[in-house]
Length: 252
Image (cartoon, rainbow, N blue to C red):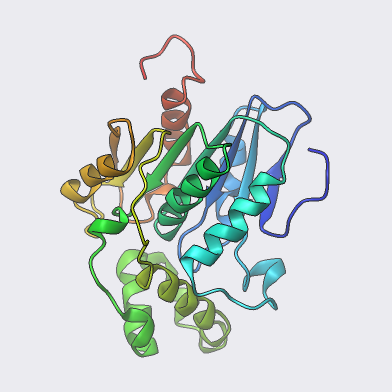
């Protein structure tokens, strides 16, 4: 992949002539490295990029952005600067909302994504009100542990908690205060991925993504909880490849 890469995009794998470019957008508090394990399961002719929000990893000292519309604008501009390739967007949780918002901006610029995958998040018009970003640290951490019990070690450490909690709170503010002025329908298909044990998104909410695409969304259920991606990257990626018709001869 030629040219200077934006700080907003971490290239986990890049080639000169990829068949497609998969761009992954992490959850609240997440970082680009969350998607590194996908490299082991993704075909070599597909580039894998992950969005790196400011305030984490190599961007730790940069000012956090607590506005989802602003995040989407920065990400869209970074993607528009890349050489043209078929683009798939995959967003998990907060990243799902961003995938939709970025998809809208890219289509407005005339270079929309071929496919948008939203994981573990309702569409903006079905997102229940929440103000956890205004609540105390205990309430915020409790919500994280409710979704991801494996994170107990991180949030139980006072030093790490002090280090990472401001970034998490900023991300919560971004998603909880996001109110799009209008709900644009994407020309690209929107597909929905859900975990069976994830109580944050109902099937009715998942179906409501149909209001935001010219296509009827495919809704696929996976075993696990809100962070099901960590346990089963291979079946998730296989599903993405089928839905984008990468795997020839299989139903999509």
